[in-house]
Image 1 (cartoon, helix red, strand yellow):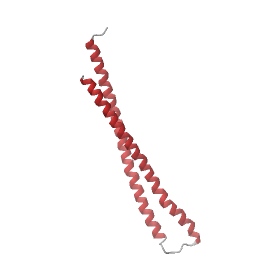
Image 2 (cartoon, rainbow, N blue to C red; image 1 turned 180 degrees about the vertical axis):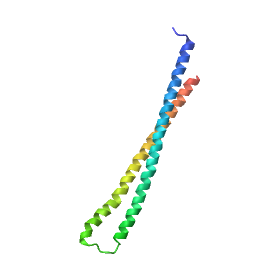
Image 3 (cartoon, one colour; image 1 turned 45 degrees about the horizontal axis):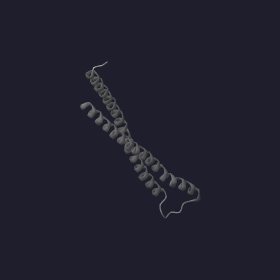
Image 4 (cartoon, rainbow, N blue to C red; image 1 turned 180 degrees about the horizontal axis):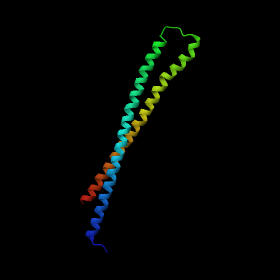
Length: 124
C-alpha cells in the first residue's frame, strides 16, 4: 500500500502533466488562429481590390449610355456576372476563416478554463 504522501505527490504530478499537455495544445491552436487571421485579412483585401478593379474596368469599357454591339453583348453579360461572383468567392473564404477564428477563440477560452481548474486542484 502506498503512503498517503506518495499518493498526493503522484496526483500532483499527474495534474502537472495535464497542465503541460493543455498548454501545448493552446500553443498549437494559437498558431492556427494566427494563420486564419492572416488568411481572413488577405481574402478581404483581395475581394475589395477585385471589386473596385472590375467595377472600374467594366465602367471604362462599357460606359453607361453607350450602346453595346450584338457581338459584345454576350461578353458584357459574362463580365457583369464575373464582376460580382469573383469578389463574393473571396469574401466567402474570408467568412470561413472568420468562423474558424471564432471557434478557435472559444476553444482557447475553454482550455484556459481547464488550466484554471487544474491549477486550483493543484493548489489544494
